[in-house]
Image (cartoon, rainbow, N blue to C red; front, side, top):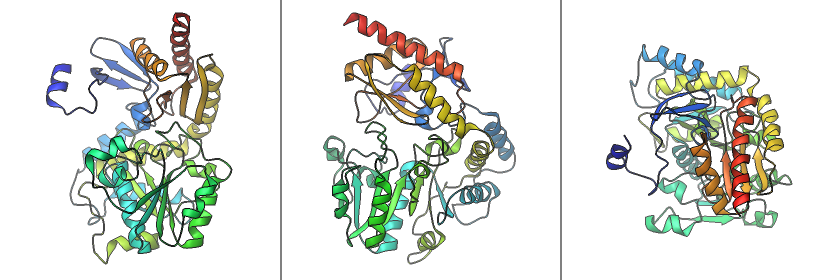
Length: 395
């Protein structure tokens, strides 16, 4: 299978991990060589309820027997999308009460940017240095990494950058600014949390000049930080929220959420201000509804914080300099990029799946399913510590 994978599928790197997956259940992925792999990555924060959660699978099968795609987004009322959007809106603080369903997190970012410019009549977008919001042209424009932007220019214009957690940059938010877009917790930069009421200060500055605050909740959303959405930890409510990854229980999806007043601007002048064929797909929406309902009706969010404590207690080692993040959005920071690479590769060989972060090369991603058990956390952390001990003894 790997030969065909490399021959017929376009690759994202010269050296993909190449596990030949044949099955996945709960916290484990099973491969064609008969091995099982404890998953500390969850499809990069996407499979919130673990692999093939019964509630998600039941919802998918039930909907598959009724109908699949019937019309482009926004024309027909379809119960899965309506039920999910209603449950989500009722679980959010005012004024976040209207949902636009799309196909991915990066499309959610594109829609949010369009909405901000449409609502304010302004063009300037302020993003954070070391941010990652996706790889389509608008999302890529929000990334201040020359290596990644240069081959694809020209990108969208009137984008500038501020430093995350730097209060001195707040005066850059002016009456020319349409929106400030930030990750609630910076992901690719190393799982950096906002400090000293930073997000609240940004929102206050935005309100003072009539700009909008867009928060990217694509990674921290859907219970991963112990709250339904990460911003709930920081005493702030965005004007527009972008979501994705963990909302679909393993199916591809995204959405942006705002007030009814803002969102209705996309329906006219011009009509179809944003349009998508497969957004709100009934199969995907059914999975989203089952995922959200399960998160809301169980103790998973509260347990996430207890599981964070467990990780922090177990991941103590001379080569680990810090454990960053919140809940089950964690990154173990080690002394060098080489050590991070060795840990990720050697743990894979021992049946534990870890992964990298995009920009912070000394980070080891730990974003397991919310359903992971304490015993599985202990098992995986034991493998990490064993690998680190072998690296240290070789040095």
